[in-house]
Image (cartoon, rainbow, N blue to C red; front, side, top):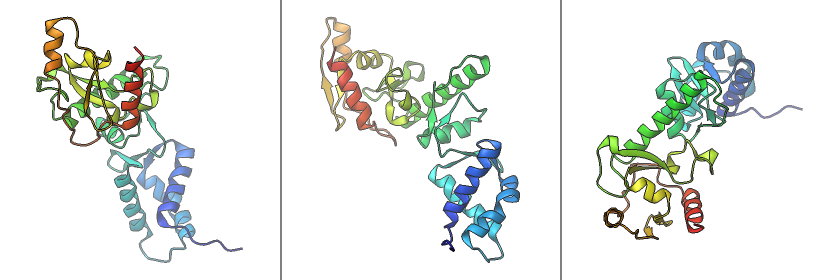
Amino acid sequence: MATDPQSWRDAVLDGLRRYAARHGPIIDRQRLLAEELSRVGAATDTRGDTPGQTLSRVLQELRDEGLLLFVTPGRYLLAEQPVDVEALELPEQTIDEAIRAGRLRLGQLPATDTVAQRRLRRGQERLRRLALLNYRCTCAFCDVSEEPLLVASHIARWADCPSGRGDLANVLCLCRFHDPLFELGYFTLGDHLEIIPRYQGHSAAVRSVLRSTGPFRHPVAHPPGLDYLAAHRSRVTRT
């Protein structure tokens, strides 16, 4: 019984999956064309003269969707599944694309050797850089903008939420004054990003920092995720 032709997108994705199963998640465009173009053409029932151009267009569309990440000219990373930064040697641009697409995972694999540890540090450094840029290199709760005083602070803690370690929606740019106070639950954030105070502190210095808190500085993109905020509120209200 004849089957209906596939869409080009579905056929190319199937071809990418077959390629990745044979060679790993790094896709070489020329090798992909050589190995998969005829099969993709048959699956789509293509009779045109330029199937290679159509496949290239679909590859670009998949890049726009964040399913393919640029590695080097003519080479891509299939990011249909989360990308474990310790597992692959990736350039900074690819790591950044994976972070922006919400596909980078940090600390998922045992970093038992120096190569894996270096890759993990590199991923953490890129996450910090993008988190700072997301908040215009200024603390989300005050006007501190001196970069040595800024950190990438996870809303749901590293140990509590492994899947959110590389997600910009789980990372705030905070100064080194507000970071520990947020971590320890002196204040938290509501679903509308309103600041919810909890403790005033016993010292004039702590009270001074708390008085400087807010309103919340909205990021360029990747606002705090509601699930992460709920996890933070749940954790700090138990203490």
